[in-house]
Amino acid sequence: MVLRLVDFRFPDLGRLLARQSRCPVFEGPSQVRAYWEALRGAGSIPDRAQLDPRGLSGVLDRVFLAESIGWGMVQVRIAGSAIAEAAGTDLRGLPLSFLFSANARPQLAEALEPVITGQAVAELDLGGGSAGQIGQLLLLPLSDGPDRRLVLGCLGHAEAALRPGRKLDVLCRREEQIYPNMPAAPPNQKRQVGHLTLIHARD
Image (cartoon, rainbow, N blue to C red):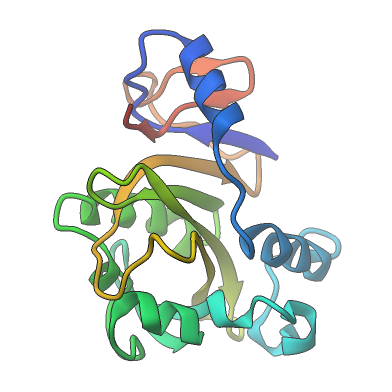
């Protein structure tokens, strides 16, 4: 797989790598990613019918399932209790963008679209105002039969920082292609250093 990161605004790679090395680890995303990878088997996108809640034991309260309702937009169908608490309401039937500030919603849409189409996995570092990084959002493609695409997600967050109703900002977005041989984005839309391509980051 190829890790891609977009709209790089740091003056040098050293500052990016230093920042990443300081990034906190939040409970949930790594377990959900490992479970999803196990379901992939030979490389196909997992189907919803394969999901077994026992494989996500301990982090189900941070997991959600959403379906596409337009370009870069998904509607939440199932959401764990911790996500409902973060939203300040039952998120089922609402767009995932409900959790985000107005400025962050276009970045969320750009992250969601390649996941919806089954091209990539996305990971977002989340902030809230001046609080710094308070969470991490993992977005994984999921099929629902031959013609339907879903998104399996996990919201890992610091318990005290993610207050009910607090709108989230996107600090950094990373994208990992599922099929590395897919055509790359035009050169003016990315900047590569080795196998890394930055999608978006905010210092």
